[in-house]
Image (tube, rainbow, N blue to C red; front, side):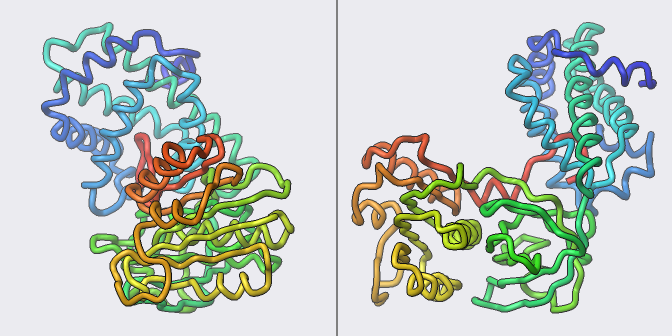
Length: 394
């Protein structure tokens, strides 16, 4: 694809979503082979791009397939896709993606589809995919260029404190090399020197501070390259990289409110930042914070919030466990305990934790307790930790 074709990719709307979906269905039985062939074509054409990708490509292959599915199934609703693509374009800056890279990716994509699509492939199908990918690439390129005018692609940061709070949990404080703007409740991506080009999301656990320090809560997952490195190998003085702050688990407006905050595991991090923000700005009439874990040993940061509750009469902190009969406090699942404490229909609700906990708690609040869905803001640790990518490195 030449530069003229790249310019043509800026077409306002992809024209034939049906053909795109039909060809994607045709290649579905050979999806893994298609993705492998895509990367082979890309790296043969542009071997210099291999260094932008992580050493192990398994997760990257899954992300590409998910991205193709999202592009194809969303082609009929370009307006809904636009902001998603703009965010991807901004995020891809930290990988070193440049506008000219999109042409190579597009060529490899078309080549892989043509090989595995069989008799479903045609000039019309090629044109449909070109239009769709070009539309997406154009939006991403424009968003990246706009973002470059106001923000660096990443921040270098030094670890200034590292504290193990449980065998698999560390609270890490980092000092970025320049101010990193964010809103309480948002997360950043982290790259470590132990696994270059592998980025993972972690929520910031404090409201913005004058010294610019950021607190991260990290649980070492069994197969988590970045989390294992941060918990078990990182030390004070080590340097990591941070991507720009993202995420929508943030307060809407600055008015006084009644707040219900529900955190499972390290989902406590964004909740803690929100509570700090309420305290700094005096934004709460009343706030209940339910912190859930299986065992009391996993309530790794309850003391800091308990100390805050002693300072602020409007703040009530309720530690809970689900699998420890001897625990001297609230026992049970978070949805059940929250329901036992009363009616929350007049509260703004913030929920952060595993996908299962978020789903169960959301269902209990909206279906059983009558909380309007519009009052809920949620963030799943599973979704955030996986992240989303389009066609670039991940």
